[in-house]
Amino acid sequence: MTEPTGPRIGADEWVARQEERLKDSGLSRFGERLGKRITPPMRFGLLVVGLAIFGIATSDQYYQRVGFNTLYYAALALGLNVVVGWAGLLDLGYVAFFGLGAYAYAFLDSPQYGLHWPTLATMALACLGCAVVGVLVSLPSRRLFGDYLAIITLFFGQIFYNLVGNLNATNGPNGLTNLDPLGFFGLHINTVRQYYYVALVVFVGVVVVLWLVNQSRTGRAWRSMREDSMAAQLLGMPVNWLKLLAFAFGAGVAGLTGTVFAALEVNIFPSNFYLDVLITLYAIVILGGAGSMAGVMLGAFTIIVGLELLSTPDNARLLFYGGIALGLVLWLRPLRWIPIVVGGTIALGFVVNAIATAVWASGTKPTSFGGQSQTMSSWVVELTDPTKAGAYGYAILIGAVLGMTLLKGWMRKVALIPVLYLAAFVWENELVLNPSVTALIILGALLVALMIVRPAGLLGKARVEIV
Image 1 (tube, rainbow, N blue to C red):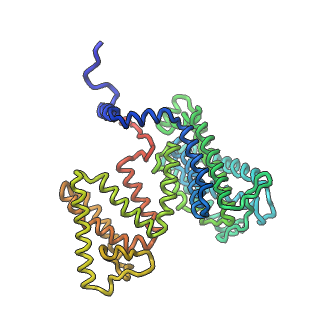
Image 2: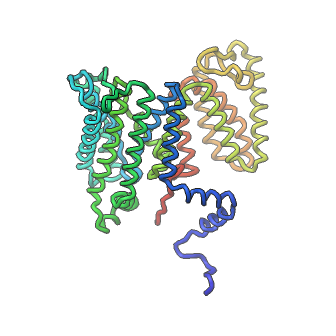
Image 3: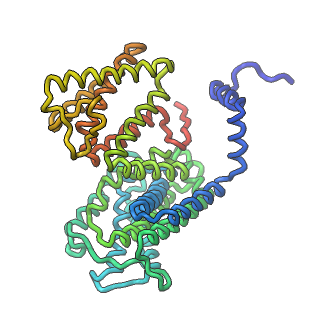
C-alpha cells in the first residue's frame, strides 16, 4: 500500500515539514531523548533541590529576600493560572484574595485583638476562608464570561481595597503593625532565610496539589471549558460548577500565600494589594504561557529577578544594552547588517556628542548622582538638567519606533541607526533616572515583543482555532 502523495486532511503540512527538519538535527534528537528521560516530576525535583541549595549558599539577606519574593509571586501566579490559564476566566479581583489572607493573619496573629492563634490554624482558616469567599464572589458571575466577568471581579477588587483603606478595624491607610512571626511546633521563624524556606515549602505544596488537580478529571474539564464552554456543556460537563471550583482553588492559594507574606512584612498596608501587584501577576502568567505551570514558574523568576536588577542603574544599564544587542543578533537579517548598524550607531554617537559638547559645554556635563553614567558621557549626550529633554526625547522615540514600521528593506535598517542612538539618549537622560517607571516600561515592551514573536508565551501551547 503506497503512502498518499497529496496533502493530509486536517494536518498542517508546513508544520509537519518543519518538525521533520528539526528532527534531522543531532542536537534536536539528543534534546528530545533527554527530555523524555527527565520527566516533569524529576525536573521539578531538581528545581527544588537547586532552590534549597540557594538558601544555604547565600548569607546575604537581600538575595534571600529576592528569593522569597520570587517564590511567593510564583505561588500567587500559579493560583491565578488556575482561573486564567486552565479555566479560561478573566479574574481582575485576584489580588483581593491575597489581601484577605494577609489581613486574616493580621487579625488572628497580632496584638490588634489580642489573638495569637497557632500558625497552622491561621493558615488553614485563611486558605479555606478565601476559597469560600472565592465561591461567593463567583456565584453572581457564574453565567458571565470575558469582559463582563472581568468587570465583576475588578469591582470586587476595588471594594476590598477601599474597605481596608477606610475601615477602623483595619486601621485604614496606616495598616496593621507588629504582626506575630510564624511558628511551627515551637519553632519561631525570625530570619529571612527561615522565611525563604517556609515560602519554598508553600510553593512546593501549591505545585504538587495543583499538578495533581490538573491531571485529574477536573483539570481536563477546566481545559475543555477554556477551549469551548458551550461544547463542554453540551458534553455534560457542569460548567457553572467548574467555574466556582476554579475560583475557589485560585482564591485558596492566594489566601495561603497572603499569610506568609504578612508574617515576613510584619506590617501590612492597603497599598500592598493595589493594581500593580495584579499587573505583575498577569505579566508573569502571560510571559510564561497561560496554562503552563512550568511557564508560570519561569515567568515569575524572569520578571521578579528582572525587576530587582532594574532597580539599580548599573544592572539596569547592562540589561538595557545587552537586550538591544541580543535583539539585533536575533532579528536583524542578513547578519552582515549587524556590524553596519552597530558601527553606524557608535560613529553617530561620537559625532553628535562632539558637536553637542562643543556648542553647549556647560549643559552637557552629567551629574555625579541620579544614575547617569560617567563612562558613557563620551559617546551619548548626557545633559546636566535632563528633565524636559528626556521626556521630549521619549515621546520622539516612540514616534520614531512607530514610524519604522512603515519602512521596509534597507531603509528600515538604515533608520535603525539614529533610533538606537535616540534610545540610548533617552535611557541615560530619562529612564535610568526613574527606575520604578522604567521597570514597568521595559516590562510592557517585553510583553509586547513576546506577543508579536510568540503569542502563547515562553512555554505556553498555541491554541488552534477553526474559523
